[in-house]
Length: 69
Ligand SMILES: [Cu+2]
Image (cartoon, rainbow, N blue to C red; front, side, top):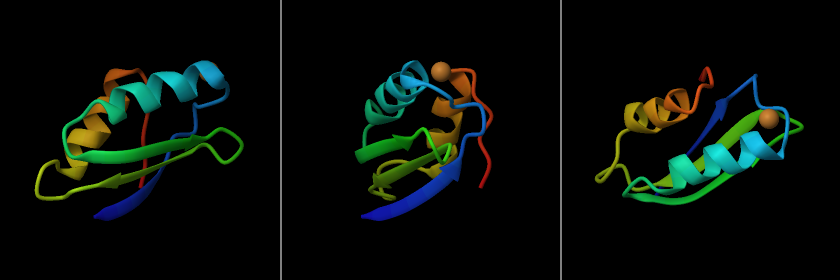
């Protein structure tokens, strides 16, 4: 399992958290996902043989959020 932490500066409330955790958590190969609102970060544990980082970033951007890191 691989863990990555990315910056999502536009995250500011529970709605953002639920949207992003739902979108990223539904990807195959993602084990856990947690958005920390105070830090504006998303931390993802995933199986890198099943899903690429770029797919995770795309899922975040598809929800309307810029992602860095
Ligand atoms: Cu929000």
